[in-house]
Amino acid sequence: METEIKNAIISSVSIDTGGGLLTAWLDLDYGGSGQGFGGYELYLTKSYSRHALESVAGHFIFRCMEIAGVEKWEHMKGKTIRVKSSHIKIEAIGHIVKNDWFNPSEDFAKLQS
Image 1: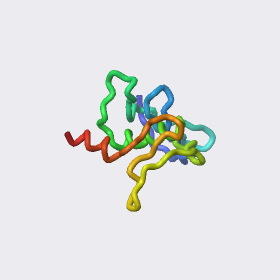
Image 2 (image 1 turned 180 degrees about the vertical axis):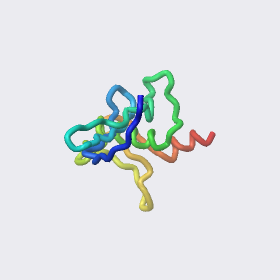
Image 3 (image 1 turned 90 degrees about the vertical axis):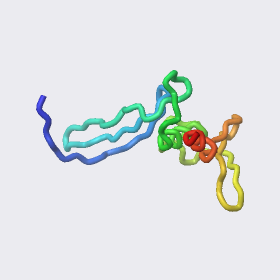
């Protein structure tokens, strides 16, 4: 199959956790037709047997979305969360109802060990 190079405009973007895995998409407009780019498994949640904290970017994005209780990155706007902070920085964010906290420093330290 022959490939071709063509110009496209990114019409929208999304980061989703549908199905328990983190994916990202670019919706492309070719001018009259369109196509999606993405859908790769960027991060697998704990419900998957192959789950491993190997991607700090994927883990950070997924956990922020999980804490906010959303499946799309853009739906976080306006959501209420809890915050553990010192005067210097925010240490962790937490779900507003569940006892679920995300402390990136603690989670990412696990990668080093």
